[in-house]
Image 1: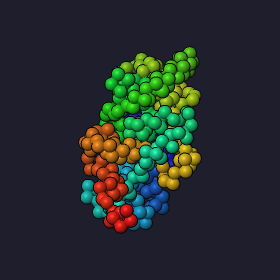
Image 2 (image 1 turned 180 degrees about the vertical axis):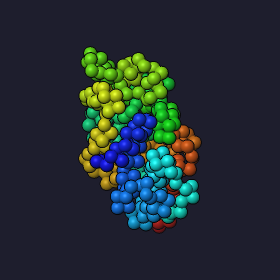
Image 3 (image 1 turned 30 degrees about the vertical axis):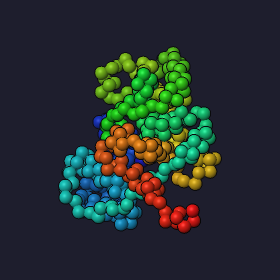
Image 4 (image 1 turned 90 degrees about the horizontal axis):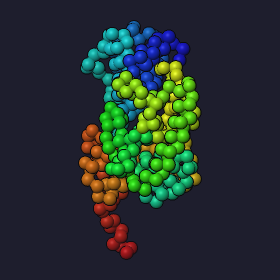
Length: 322
């Protein structure tokens, strides 16, 4: 990214504490918008060009509604915050109506086979994805203090939409989790002996409120990276969490070895968790709480999966060939 304008936007977002992923997403869509308009400066463009661009994304690129919404959010930010010239609240553009695909779900046997072929390094975190219905980023961002062994639950803080929740913890994973925390202790002792170590990254408000906690064991990542890295914000060394791409690659490899002919990602394990809970008789509101959905309609997609499976319908063919 060589554009000084984009660099300025990135630095501003960084300074006002936007997340790394939000910064990357907004910069991507702002740059895309500029390139679409033949590299004209956004200050010379406004409502009309934004409407054309958002319609183009649907008509030519066939993006999903959520993708179009992210692009709109990025451009709203650009014009309201950066250029101090807010877009109209009544933009007229073609809205995406692309139907959402039903999520891919694995059977119990496929889950068992997949987990049996996961490498040792990534097995535990993959078991948590399925066993507790965690999103991938929720899992890699877990701290040692988030595991509650007494109540057999996991506390997920400031997840998607800034929400927090408590999810179930399979008792069978407790021994492995205790071993994992012992491994974290070893890393932690090693880091404390390093003069360049500045503690683990903490959310901004907590960083100011609990200044000494960044070097406390309780705040260390449950799945730490192998080495220290330079924090681009503070320019000091920290131990980050495991890179999520490692988990993605490990799941892809295990899927191939298991010869599962489905498109499987770490998020597939979360979909499978929800579907299997419903299959076992769990109330949809309970599943909603476990997944952290604000609206039960989001959770109801898993009931559609069960209906498509024909769980309650006897095929007329069965009466003929039985």
